[in-house]
Amino acid sequence: MNLREFLKNQKYDKGLCDIIIDIQMGAIEIFSKLNEEYYDYKGSAGEKNIQNEEVQKLDIIANNIFIEKFKKNIFVEKLLSEENKEPIKLNMGGKYIVAMDPLDGSSNIDVNIPVGSIFSVLKKNPNDFLQKGDLQKLACYVIYGTNTVFVIAIDKQVHSFSLNSLKKEFYLTQKKIQTPVNGNIFSINEGNYKSFSPEILKYLEFCKSLDLKNKRTHTGRFIGSLVADFHRNLIKGGIFIYPKTNDRPSGQLRLIYECNPIAYIAKHAGGLSTNLRHDILKITPTKNHERVAFVVGSKNMVQKLLSFR
Ligand code: F6P
Ligand code: MN
Image (cartoon, rainbow, N blue to C red; front, side):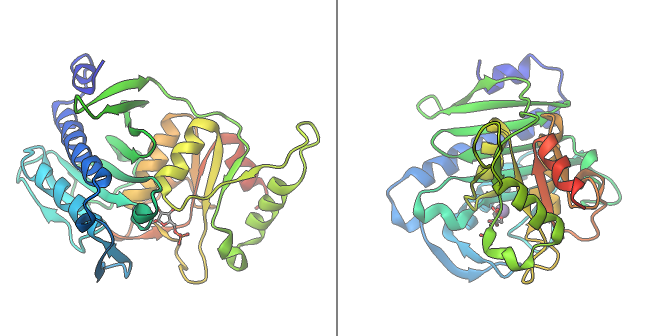
């Protein structure tokens, strides 16, 4: 069953369905750009974004692709993007506002490692984008990996769809995804070791000590694309940890368009997320590009880490 047929069979709000279809169309365009040999699309754009990160040409292309899609969507009133300082006003009277990271992990493009696009959809509200993640109406990402997969959390369920690039449609591959309660993968950038708090150090020690039953330690995996690290852990069971660091004292990842949608997907797949003090989805953001410490993954693994506090 393709994504359009799937949506037709559900009782989801029309606005949310239209947003999903726009994301599908944008993702297919990005998939084509990523897979072309044409080198004008690759490499750095030679500028920094408002967050002082190097911008890749494809960051700009992906951003423009999705802006153009949402511009024509009467349900989308405003769009907040990682690439734009201020939210972009789109369609007056639209019922929803969308926050996005149009190309997550973009420093990995030139080395052939998966990247993604992440979206969070909220109802329009006087607080604008400064709403708790629990209030999201739709959260989703596309991972452009060995297969291009669209993971959607809507109506408290998580489903995944795979791209058939010849037919230019996504097809349902997994309904009501549940992440394993336990796992043995831990994902953390250990280059930041000197910044880790005692509870993280204790948890890493636990991950690295031999499990007598399985005669193995946990497995360390860090790709450097949040979407890819999360997606693997969602399917196999695991924990992703990006704490506050000396050079990123608030954390590396952005609450509104990276952590919230990923945390919402994790929750409805049976997982957990935290900033090590609160559930991610219960935090009220104070600014649009706010960064937070982020831990997400299999329930028992996140709880184990929290038990070392
Ligand atoms: O979007 C930020 C991001 O690229 C994530 O995709 C990734 O998890 C993280 O930053 C990696 O950052 P670093 O390589 O500095 O640890
Ligand atoms: Mn990102």
